[in-house]
Image (tube, rainbow, N blue to C red; front, side, top):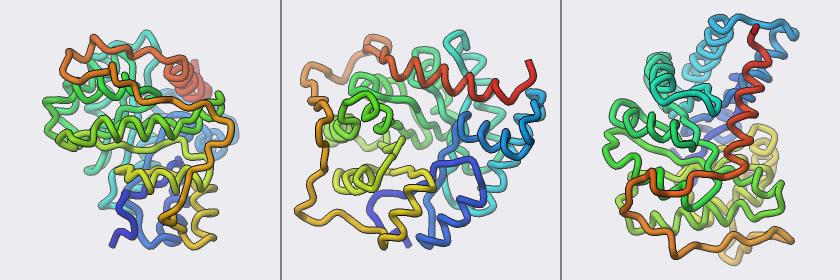
Length: 282
């Protein structure tokens, strides 16, 4: 059924986009959601009205269930809500609750210390997705933190946000895939924050396990016949600063020994939190 070696996800918070994307391609392997996308959906549907936290979570659950009805066999990523003060135990409580919303949930944890601490336990109980990843060091920590996983584990490098800062975000995908190449394939690379068709083509060329695509870009790709990279395809990185593979980063240490810090992870965690809290009554 799958047309591509990579699994194709849609990235969004609107069930109708999921339906349209599935109709265009003929299938979808899954969907990713995040607080910004869900908050945007809720703000539009509620006309700017603020919701209680319980009401907002109820709406998130409803959206996820609608998506599940469209792609019942697909993996659907649902995010825990966290800021820098949120402890791992709080994230686990959220994760266990969200995992009950649908049978094919994959729970998203931020790539920060408390997020990986929670994920190291959650991966024994449910599928997980480590989000807001921007570096090879973070990917190393994710691999080591999830060694006891009994369910699928995804890592989501956000390429577009690196591009926005003038760095070649696709290099991070390339580096992670290279680092994981000779391992047990337990952690799947999910290329995220796709901004254009070249991101898709290069992710396909690199054999990214999964590619999640916002509807606008997905539609443009579909209108072009869901093009694949030709044999001679070269990714047009233009003036983006390369992010070279770091040979000094070695697997085999405790995950807490790796450098999880990245300014875009910090900014992403805060942005997700602020966007979600923007629809919730304080």
